[in-house]
Image 1 (cartoon, rainbow, N blue to C red):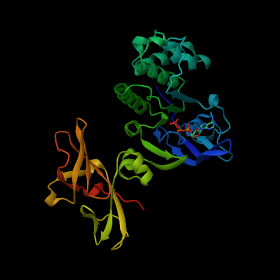
Image 2 (image 1 turned 180 degrees about the horizontal axis):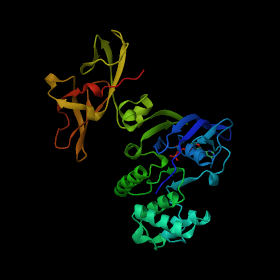
Image 3 (image 1 turned 90 degrees about the horizontal axis):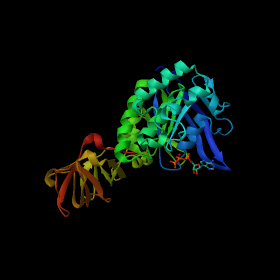
Image 4 (image 1 turned 60 degrees about the vertical axis):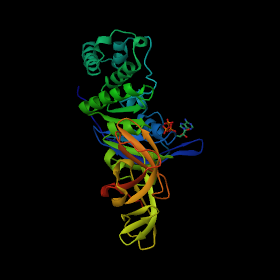
Length: 348
Ligand code: ATP
């Protein structure tokens, strides 16, 4: 299937509802064929941004939405050529799978032979061929969401918009459908904007992620950028787990309660109070004699492939360190912690 991928540009798109600004002016470009994930906590403005792209909301005065070079701001949703997939599926219960997938083609009066060819192709791509003639209520949640995806793609949208499409599914199904969806989006190279509050989903699907909080874009970057080079503390704390090591600058070291670690904060001078951060998987448990920090295990939570340790006494905060699942450490054990050099982060 060939799709005409276009870029999507938001210029100064803000949104105010009844006098309350819920979205600060956003400037953002989603490249043609790119999958952009909007990630952030509930109420941060993800869905509002998606609805502005769709044409279901108009941005506040001055905001523009462009598809390729075309200004689509005045166009309603039916004239923007967008496909939408929702958490709630929003399928037609009285139509079969085939009827649902072909719906958009019928209302656009696509030639019946061409429509049939396209529907067959999409049913095959979404592994629904065997279910083509079933009514919707005989399908599982995962199958329903694949129907919704095929239905959104059938009219060959210029942009595909997905609002928490996997949230209603159980964990295992969510993971397998996520992989299928990823393969499909990559094969079709359709420009996609995907809203989720699930960071694993965002990491797995995105070419780039936009992290939002309280109506603002905090950072836009590749999943690796966002995870390893968070722009600020808000992003770091929202994505994964972070440990804070607070102490005092002493030359090229940072001296803290339970030890001394290499100094990474630029422009810190002797005696300055400094904070550095690291993620649980960037630390190793080592012999206390050769450790940067020493503390005692307060809890060890076995999670299968890894064990998550809580360690007190190494610095002001309780630290979280991940070790391989086979390592067993009882509460009260004195341990040494060493953080790999590239694992340290500082924020201005
Ligand atoms: P969630 O993950 O819970 O869907 P979200 O990040 O998608 O959250 P939005 O749905 O964009 O957030 O909502 C952002 C803010 O705007 C929220 O405070 C919400 O209550 C408010 N809001 C959204 N739509 C409207 C509306 N039609 N009228 C008034 N307020 C609205």
